[in-house]
Image: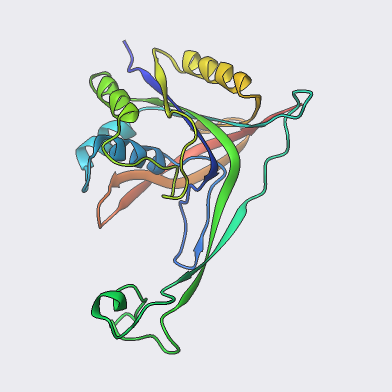
Length: 237
């Protein structure tokens, strides 16, 4: 028998799934990254550090994503909500003479005070009012443990960034095939008055093919990733 699929429902007012961000500009993809989903599972398990062996096992399975948007009163899909741009000042308001507070202020590469002060402007982008069904194939011997951890997580769960708090139970069950997990997700979407918007399939298919550097090889302080190819297939009226 093939490994089972866990259905994760990711819904929140804000979500952020960055894969190519820099300090001053924190972008987000239109859909969850594999590194974000596996990071969420590691949080649920309380698995810190590199976790190379666990990530290697979890990266071997398929990940199928479907996106859902709110509907109007007639049940028609609404346009995807625009990205939210959140403006931040990093390092502002701290007492640079205080040894502890001084650590919060950005420094030069040599650890010295920056010219003109250490305050930096950053722009952080987030998805608004989206819901995603993620059918994640996991090793059979880990499926039960991961499911239980998602119900009673060791650490707080969030959808990309810590201010992106889920508004629905993430774990929605275990299924033998991806088709069964997707069908259950579509029933859940209908009950929430949400409509299918697009899907993301691994590999090259008909649609928009992307290369993402989002398969984690190790977490911790020295994060490492490898590439994968995915295809985004939009809803057709």
